[in-house]
Amino acid sequence: MNLRPYTVLLIVPTGVGAAIGGYAGDALPVARAIASCCSRLITHPNVLNGAQLYWNLPNAFYVEGYGLDKFASRCWGLRPVHSNRIGLILDRGIEPDLRVRHLQAADATRATLGLNLTDYVVTDAPLKVELRTGVTGASWGTIENPDSLLRAAEVLIHQAKAEAIAVVARFPDDTDSEVLQNYRHGQGVDPLAGAEAVISHLVVRTFNIPCAHAPALSPLPLEPDISPRSAAEELGYTFLPCVLVGLSRAPQFLVKTQMGASQPEDIWAEQVDAVVVPATACGGSAILSLSQLPVQIIAVEENHTQMQATPEKLGIKALRVNSYVEALGVLVAAQAGINIDALRPNFSSLRCLYS
Image (cartoon, rainbow, N blue to C red; front, side):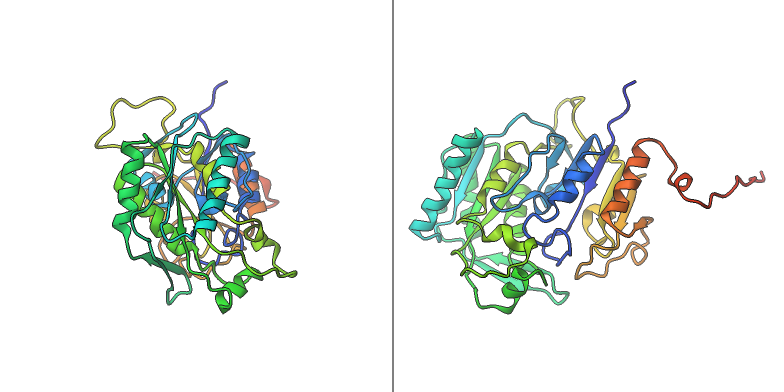
């Protein structure tokens, strides 16, 4: 019997200090577990990127945050691909030695993983990333020369026929900052994440193609008591490998106003069955949009964030669970067509409705 694919959306917002998913790929175990009990998992780079660590999930779709918002609002669809031609943008502000390290990482993914990269482009001006922290504690940032980024992307798309864009921007080194030290020891907010989102959002919004970002940084001084959750960022010279792996099979975006005939494998927001999100981070555009659809929203209490956007405050109907382990049980029951109340000891009788 052929059942409709059971589709789950996993969201851990970027730069909000999530206890799980706020560090270097530490939400990957959650993604792996959920992918094992659903037909299709849709998630975003913050969940799947682990610097030089990554995991191949054949049924997972790597969707940048702005594209995820447009998908959830029913403006864009997702079209699965076998592979993408990835164009690489390097910030002119990256020092020569550090640039070589990133080019070596890109060549390594071609030779070792067989990824399909085009020739690369160096921006015509340094992007000049600046980092900020908002009043809520969430991180964000700006780039001084966004036009230079867009010109580089345009060259890759039109001349190199790139189908996805990887960006490496030089981020400021701030090895002595309290925020960075807290992050390395498993506390606080990723100071880079908010600015990374700004960069990828700009490319996706302008060109409607997959994009993800990897920061270029000087290696941090060795420290023996780093938190396991942030340890992936201590490896090597670059965070680029996971980005290239993710983009290699990222679905293409289908813009409703521009699309031709729909194909059977295309995915639309109406096909999402469940969304898993931290219980205090339900205020994002994707969750607000999907709350208007018949989608099961599962809010995980254990994944604390710096936000206070609970489903109750926003008038969103959600099922609260204590942990991702409990969320997995809900998903398994739902895919099997089992009412989760039947799995609890107290089960009420049917009531009569009066007409």
